[in-house]
Image (tube, rainbow, N blue to C red; front, side, top):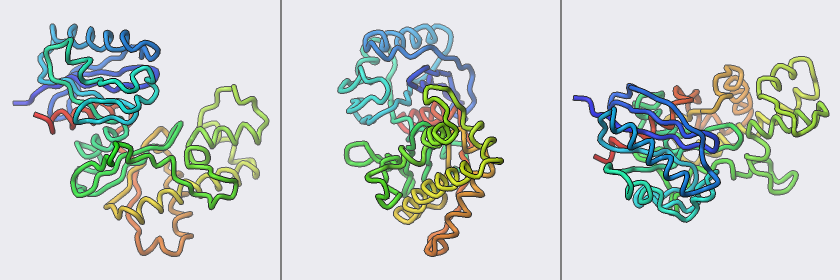
Length: 295
């Protein structure tokens, strides 16, 4: 018989939640705004949601996907990502003291990787990397059929890699290979105010008829590809998956392969590079995986 779990995906803007079956079916889902400036209100919102849903749904456990450097064994947040008011707090303990269910918690990028292992594009893989490309660059490492969290739960901070040979000092991948970095360069080239909201798709559309932008995006692909090469050469996975809104673009993978093929040693370590299957529900499904691994 399929068991049910209440799963949360905590983001800086909204907290998504859903009741999920062990087979990955989402029975219900919704969200509420993240109260990220008040720790007490954040916890009370979570507790109220759990208690309200328990009156309607039956579930075994509460599983939380959370940003930052999270100790999944204790629930302690060494750094709580965008929810800075919970830095140095034990999130698991704070929630559990007000509810009648056990709580498990895991870093959100790790959950994105676990979602792919659960029922995504890494189900058959014992060794894979999941890289998320968005405002920043992060990811999860799954090696020898288990997550690699690191000594202090900071593994997967791919965006901190230096990939440009220090041409302009210590610029990391967050600064030169994220989607937000690409948008920033687009605004500079097009003389658009940095406060103007621009989506990534606008950049790719404008590039078609602009030689200067084509050079910028080609350099962006080069930086991203260098980071991918470094990860694959270090960890030798079966495949590398890319997540984030940009991963729906076929030309992303064409350009990455084009740049990787320009590196002589790529052929010696080459592995498939594919998009993630899950996007919006990755956090919920990854939290589900964590819950089922902690009966």
